[in-house]
Amino acid sequence: MAEKSIKSTTLDDLLKEDIPRLSVGDTIEGTVMSVKKSEILIDLGPQGVGFIPRREASGLRDLEVGSKVNASIIDDDFDGTGQALLSIRKAAKDKGWDDILAKFRDGSVIEVVPYDANRGGLVAEFADIKGFIPVSQLSPSRYPRTSDRDEIMKRLATLLKQPISVKIIDADKRLAKLIFSEKEAIRDQLSAKISELDVGDIVKAKVTGATDFGVFVNVDGLEGLVHVSELSWGHVADPTKLYQIGEEIDAKVVSADKDRLALSVKQLTADPWIKESKSLKVGDEIKGAITRTTPFGAFVQVSPVLEALVSLADLGAKSADQSPVKVGETHTFRIASIDPAARRLSLKLVK
Image (cartoon, rainbow, N blue to C red; front, side):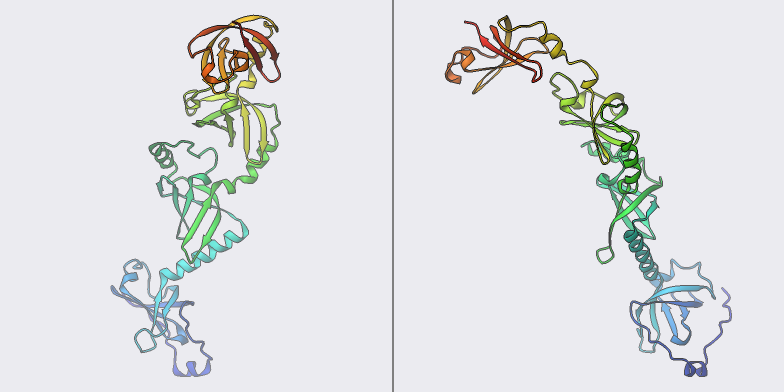
């Protein structure tokens, strides 16, 4: 490549100027004066000539003589002749961190494009610095609510090369630590949405995951939880078997706090316990099956809906060893009390 003519600095020029010394770590602007396979020489004006070594030259072949560049000073006199050792990559990285820390301080929303994923989250870059979006910091609509590692990877893979708006929630140049959060970037938006909902509202919810304590759903971008106790009026042994991921269900808003909703499915239907208990009255004799025993009594299933805990005293026993009933047996009981508000039925064994 033909080298362009660069205006040289004369001795008179040097004598006229108060030339500041180069300091390791500083960033300086210079002009490319020579591009070779193994090196790039940078004219630093009154401060001499800088040298970019082979390890960086291979990635900078598009630089031309006369180009202006910013470089970081690695050594102000690396060869004993006053020539400075420079790094363009370090200068770019330092500038990147300056941009990152500025965005971190002012809470700016930025856009990143994930290019890799692991079970913990997504890898993305900003200002040429590698950062991480933990799974827990994804928006509710993207959060893979599952403990299946293969399923997590499958869902994260769909987000690669897709722009995501995030905020920087942790940035430490010394530790090379950069953490992004999509949840923080949309927090105000979610708060606005949640403020439009009232307790008692009926909403459409899409199932996003399930655990032993309930079912997670998405309501117009808001994350909601239907606790296991709000899934059905009856006992739910395994919430993960109730719905399929992506299934749409109706739910009632029980509470709305910040960016999280508590919902109920069972409250959309009448309580069968109340309906069935209306046909009973104190003093009636009914039959019930012993489903399990405890040190303080036994559980009796009167119907698919009605269950009662009968104390040892009402079984006519002083201790569990003296209990006259066993699991699987059916016995006759007399109704001692009915409490619809507490959904409690008290029974006494008829001998």
